[in-house]
Image 1 (cartoon, rainbow, N blue to C red):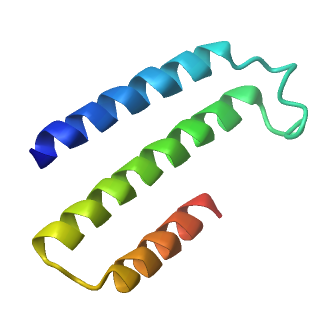
Image 2 (image 1 turned 90 degrees about the vertical axis):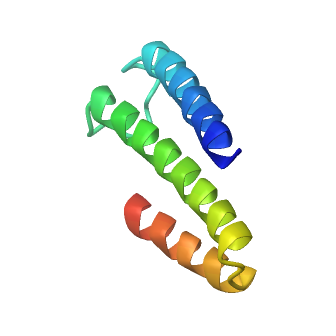
Image 3 (image 1 turned 180 degrees about the horizontal axis):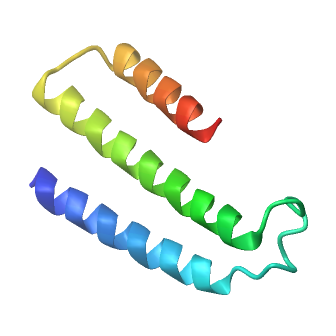
Length: 85
């Protein structure tokens, strides 16, 4: 069951990021003018994939190990912040 959910999430992320990646143009990314548009596109893809992986891991850990939800959420937030920053 969890592997099917994970597979669906990965397929959705691939579809979403690939379509957005193709639509991203250099002229529209005015916020990060110093960085090339390919770098910002790749970083967006990485952030989305990392967030989905963290969410899936949190769900599996909460269901299987039954750890306190607060601890899992704190760890997930720290991981996301470290990766994004």
